View 1: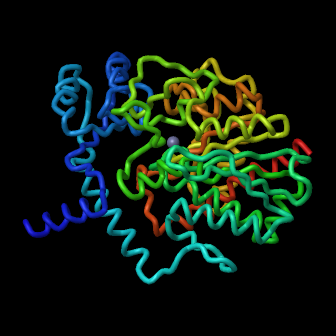
View 2: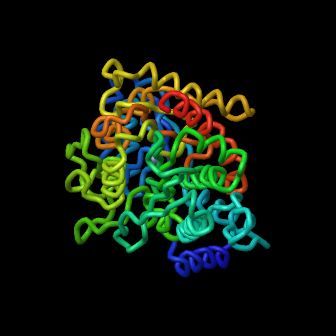
View 3: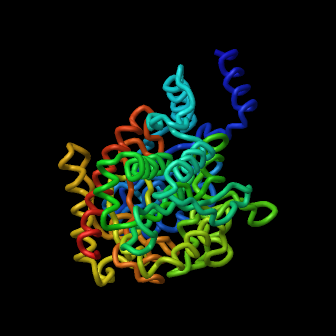
Length: 416
Ligand SMILES: [Zn+2]
């Protein structure tokens, strides 16, 4: 056993994996009165709420070892009903890594020119870029790739413009994946859609007939690579904000409804020193600045939860977006498009009501600042938290396609 442990430690040292040893995950079901006290923990360093729901529902949080004693004392003192869902997060991280190694055995690179890409593995950020560049070179009449900015670690953040005419003359659907580093299941669904739009003539004809597409498949390549290679549950970007602190939550850094509050750097939802301070948010902001008047639908693709969520994030019921009925109806089309193919059942609703208030998120910015008529945050996958099994990713991407398609057909009909 000791030899085995030494081996594991050696692997971690060799590959530079950050350990989640003895990180615990708690499920808590606070009452109305207890909820506010629990909310005060949200911005603490070492506290990572995976879900923070309304009172009487079960929220989930991961707590670093050095915070557990204090946190458990708080739970006992306030009488919040709780249980430890995961005793040692590191066990799950190691097991995921082993599954990935097994899944990849005997496979070659998922992206090879001239071959259908392999969607049954998680791609590296480089492989994503390689595929997107390949599409632009191979189908110049359909795809243009444009560099938006470079990330703090000098990776390219780019957009694809997909059109069977002159880009921007039809209504545009804009979307982005990979904003949150650890949400690995997001980019593959976006890349699979891109593959269908460009390389599958049946769907290409249908889905490019009335709309153009503006796609950023990987908004946060630094964070994604850090999650892949170092710290599996990293959420933010990788900018050195202060000499002692790295990382901003891009989805709290947008201008519309941006709040400084008292969230310190080091907290999971640190919104940055000022609004749009980060290349990953600024790139999307300036891209949309150029096309917003033509963009009719904006999708921000995240995990987890099987949810289709509409604005506002800064204000839930009764302060919903004025077009909430239309938003709900189009969200239902997504849900039904997937259900009709035997897929999972999505919850459709207001993002703040379902997930709690968030300030400075991209959805509010696209709806509030740019007035884009339909804006959604999609939370794909449930039941696996952030660690959606790699072997199932291809099936998920194929299933999610029906949701994208249902929305796109409606937007095409309504606005063209
Ligand atoms: Zn997310």
